[in-house]
Length: 493
Image 1 (cartoon, rainbow, N blue to C red):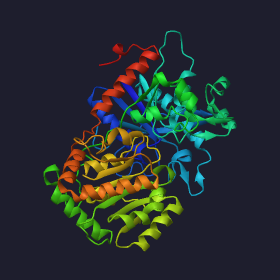
Image 2: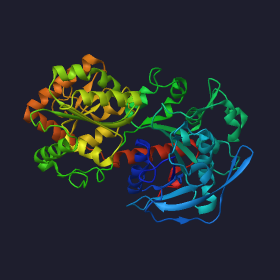
Image 3: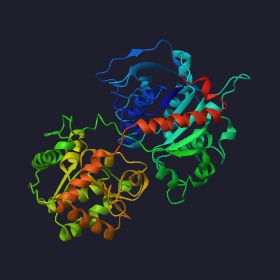
């Protein structure tokens, strides 16, 4: 079968987080299970740095409201793979320093940019002579695509391509003033409660949920959570209505890209056989890099995260003075985001220079060294659709301490519930009492060397490849094709 990924970002060409990582890692795994998969994404500034590419003859014709726009297609490949990537070249819409927002906040034309991506994906086959059986739209910026497909008038007997929408984070929905619906050129009937209308506003993700043949989330637990009023971010009714077509598939990780035995960012790469000495050397080097006293008798906890409310690190900042008073440990944090959180953590580092080191910003190499050099990894997220950082941390032998939500539940086996296969600790919530209990348990585990080594090995051996998720997505594509009246046997190799 032929599948086109439609996404605003793809790692390593353009990335802000987990969405780009998934779009960059899942297609090669789908290729391995027999799916002819390609990707279309905007040509953001810097996307082609160091990559070979070629322009495709002809122009995309994209109507946005009464305006007819023209864009070019640039073809390249995902580095290290044979997966084709088509980049939408339009300087006015996409040649910007960032993907979604600038120094003054979200770009005011994000609705227009979203529909350009969707319409470009639909016009793509005209230029390349390759027509997908399934369009796989990713998150709100591509979420209008299923409705755009449904609105196309086709000759009698011509089959419609199927659509799958993946929700990577329901918090981000693409909500705009109702006037923006006019630029979509969709039937007026699509702007109602059963479509894009949400409390009087245009909601792109809601429209995608209502129109897609199948919907996926990035973990099984998150698929259940988004159908509850407390976790649905206002889309409870739509997701309950589409529950029969909603599937949770846990994200994998690229095990080659995240391999502590071959990671050039580490001062002392290590494998499962050399993990104890390797992590000791990595911790020693990390302590020096972060200007923390090297204290091998104390557990070192790490965090690599954006600093905003979802991630729950504000709760950690508030509790940290008491946690340090009752428990003896060190903390290394890498992150940026909310200025108040940045200030809080910086103040804590100044207050406890021998126990806390904070690096504001993002540095991929440092993130990897934190995974490798720490004993425990903190993810007190209020909600977490899947979470990749805890999977990276486990791969590098750092045991996650995380809230019981979303994909964290699906990836972490808590010591109390799974004593024979434990690979981390799960909190019932992120209130101060729960944090105190978790930190005390972590310190106790660290003091029991055999238990620490046992859990560390469980974490490193956890199966986290994309093979099983790719097989699950292939099934979803077949189900979507059946729902759109395409016979999958006729198009599968």
